[in-house]
Structures are given as C-alpha cells and as structure tokens.
Length: 296
Image (spheres, one colour):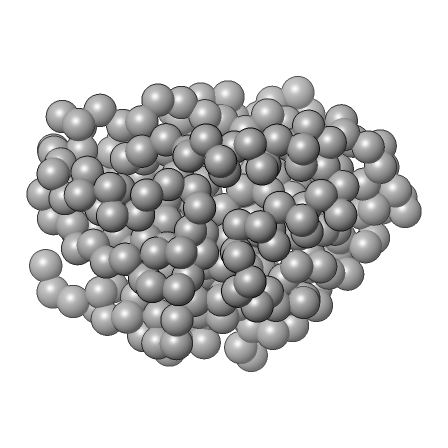
C-alpha cells in the first residue's frame, strides 16, 4: 500500500494510514506467537499472517471480499491454531497488505487458481486444508475443482456464487455502497444485512476504513457446473448463515447436497452473512477443527 496519508482510488479518497491502523488493531486480537510473510507470485506480493505450531497441519484461510481481509478470522484463530498451522491470506488486489503487480491482476478463475498455486508453492505446501468465507469460499471452491490433489479438506462459510445467486433485496441494498463506497454507506449496508446482530467495533472500523480502496474489479464468473461438482472427491463442510440476507440458506444447502458427493451441511441460526466468521456461534472454531481433523 502507498505510504501517503490518502490516495485517490477509483471511488474517492482512501485513507491508507487509517486502514493500516484498523487492520493492526484487529490483528492484535489474534493469539500470540504469530508472524507474517510476504510471498511473491506472478500477480504480486501476497501477505500471509501465520499462527499456530509450525509443524501443525496447514490450513489456508481466505477472507470474503470488501474490507474483510485475513484479520477477520481473529475470532476463530485461537481454536484453529491449537491443532493447525494457520496461513491467513490477504487476497491479491483486495483491501489488505498484499501488493498487486503493476499492470497484472487476476482476471479469471484460472488466474486465481494460478495465484493460489504459486502461493502454496511459495509457502512450501504441497497441500493444505482450505477454508473460505463468502467470496473467499468461491475462490476456495474454484481452486478445489482445479487442483483437488492439493486440497485435503474444504470449508465453505456462507459461500456466494457457488450454488445460488444473490437475492434481489441484497443487491438493491448493496448498490449505493458499490457505486460510491464511503464509510457511512458501508456501515449502513452492514447494519441492514446483519439486522441488529451486534457488530464488533474493531471489525466494523476496518470495513469502513476499506471504503475507496483502489481495487481492480474482482474476478467473477458462472457458478461451477453440476457435473464438475459431482466429481469433486474432497470432504466439504458447508456452513450457512441462517439469518443472512444474501440468499436462501436452506435452498443453498439443498443444492449443494444434490451435487457434492462428500458434503456435510448445516444452517447456523441467528447468524448473518457478514457476521461470519468473526461473530459466529460459540464453538465454531472447535467445530471447524474437528472437521479438519476427522479421518477420510
């Protein structure tokens, strides 16, 4: 990121220093013995926060879009790091500490897969568990379909674009924020989607600080083909936000169960889409760890 106080992004002024301060505040709530590395890839330098025993089974964490960043896994990091070595990634080209290469950023799902391949290679990982939330879950599933041998187990937290589209009301409420993101519009949208669920002030401050981040257009694409999903021989845990407004959680669960051969699904009551994974039910981290540690 630039070191100037503010940078003019595509959608207005972006306060880089304010964003870094909010990011660091949330990272300070991760458990101790953490570190960070920067991994070169063909698409730029990728920032990865590390936590847990160095000899633990590897688990790569992908955040959602917007201002989520790797820091948003803080509420699950303590439980997961007891059994796994965590690699929490800032998506390339999205808000965070990763730095895209000049003139080159992922434009297709295949590009994102190539980026993740290079990232795993740079981390020295032949394979890993892979967990993603929202847009990060879409990336995780796309990667698992292309490189199943490198994905030991797959966790999808309220994924978008994988089994169903966005609800019309969600898109309508998101439109002002998408057209001209400001801290006030980000807060208003998140308060609508979470419908009164208490939001962590530190987490919310980071989402607001990401408004106006100079990002390229995120990679999107069609939902994975049913035949491709039927061939995915990887254990999948699909957890959906029962109070979310992105899509119909039970419809998504039913669609996933109809095509994924090794899927375990559950709808989490009282949780909204944007409250995951930080404001999730108590014990979620232990549940994720148990799934990751189960025998195949």
